[in-house]
Image 1 (tube, rainbow, N blue to C red):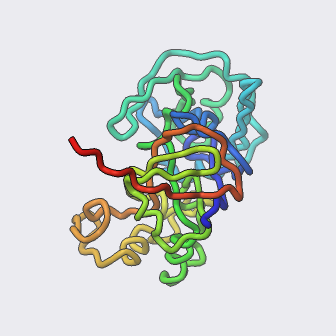
Image 2 (image 1 turned 90 degrees about the vertical axis):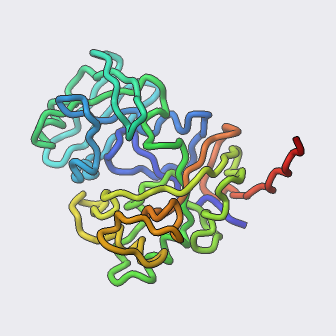
Length: 275
């Protein structure tokens, strides 16, 4: 029986991942996940695509005390309360507007120094909103291991490159792709798998340094079928009309807790209802 083998979250989008032993899924995802993100001087989203070394920052968020701490390389922790909010901002998350407020405190200045250009810390107004598309991402350990096994130098392709919320043991490689359209029980929660996750250039970056050190996108494409050109030309026989995909997105149908070792059970397909 498949089971949850790893959970990965971070309170600040683009920073180092944490691996809790359990979390709670709400209708809008995990409340502690990506409560904050960064924007530039024009209030455009800043993440690993723009500055990979953000992944070397460790962010810690105390929900009850509203305290955020950032461990930034080369300096001591930058911490304080996030209760004081500044002007409202709306961030474009790949075509989806996400409402938030600039956070008053020491973080923006420290992050600006680290990035080398002006950036601001933003708190989302609605917990769970700062995900790329859907609130849950899932991949099987076998999918990642298969990719490692068929790729020269694949030992560098660990799970952190893909930044998935839930990893599952006990599946065949790419078995999660067959769950699209189905409900899946994850511990005490139930999700509906809605489609594959298109991968981006962040997967080419080392999860330790944030520097590009591997052609992960090309490795994924080769492992799933032949591609042409520069990986931008759709190929009909590949999932998601030829996008470079790995893992799946899901929405939350029944909120609840998820823990390491919890059963993962694809549920029976609902019977069609005659009109």
